[in-house]
Image (cartoon, rainbow, N blue to C red; front, side, top):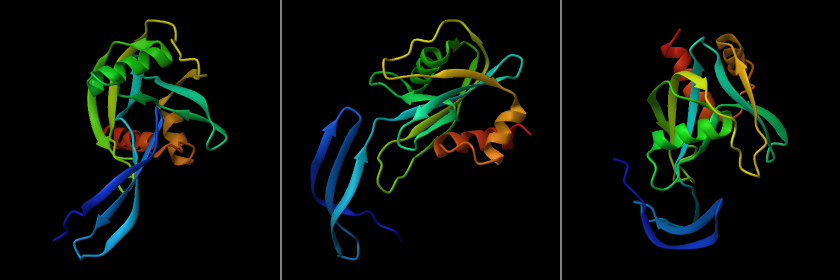
Length: 179
């Protein structure tokens, strides 16, 4: 039977708004002590598969500096303190795309890398959304909204052009459940 590790001590290496990292000294059930297990702490995240009444997927394109690429993605963001995951997802969709309304449901929760990251991503499906406002981007955001057909989104996945695993997983699930 797999048992939990025991944290012997823990210290923060960095605590910044977008990067918090700690190092834990842990003891495994076997008694082995691992002196440096690193953990990245993040708030929970949300993403949204948003589909208009006429079946178009509301996608975004933005530059991702770590990969030095402009990528096509789902609308996504941070779940702010005091918001439910759905409230966060609705806010992010409206701010980043100007789309809102529709029927919403959470389709899955996933972790980005549970070995070293402590957060969860809540993935939503919003059907029947419509454009109701202009984008309300943060100063550090440069986001292009694009509407894509079901076939175009599926091709992104098939051609390995959806590099964000936390977005590919709910899209693959959507296509499995809606053949």
